[in-house]
Image: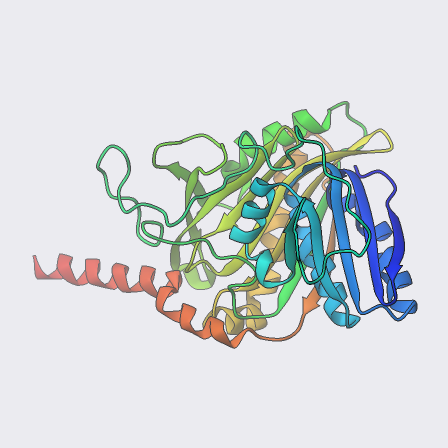
Length: 361
């Protein structure tokens, strides 16, 4: 969890907020309070100094998106400072460079650099180490290292970040308290991560494909889902982050949503809490219509089922909590072009073609 932050006005209209410790979702209230003070002081620009941040998980990545959304709502221009080169690359690949300025430790001549001299970050610090964070992935290859073609709607697909999608931007959290049993966050997270597909509703599954068939950064996942009415959907994800208590998957182009979902566990006053957290937009106008009609409710039922199945396995009461937060009600009209990659349409088309071929035999 993050340590207390500090915030100060560095020049008229310009505020700098310094974070330290682990960048994760539990710093949300303190960061929101600091932004409120900056807005009340009539600031026009807010920078986050990450020079003392020692680690970041998928919830921290989501928190940076919420920071950007809060700044936009209050008329503030956001920026990040004292990033390591690798951390800046990870954030850029996940689309955050389109939402805010991303500066390295020494960002000389940056138009929005603080007027006071920055203190260099520790040379051995890396908040996005290769052992935990995927970086430099590019498009999924067409075939695996064994020469076998990768599944439909996975092969050749690029990442789909919350900045790439079409619809409203939502942040949703589903929580389960594991009261009455002795299990650590590491133990709960390990079971959730390794049995994730087994906990899903029947007819839905996740299968790792390609070179890394383990939940390691960069691993490719093929997802088969059942839509309302039984229609199949074949789509893909990639592992962005993995540590002992947290796993973050990023969607591939054509998925119903463009964004990230994190499966994590943490200690809350001696009780382990399991958390499923998503930050995403629908992928294109067709998916947006589907979510408006039934998708949000179906999605909520899906993750409630997952946490209920986990609770039943562990022998605790399946009491889940859901928190929804609309970060941006605007549509990203550039996302209309994503219709050409719509995995639901492509899966249906492939199913029809296969059926026709069988009839011709």
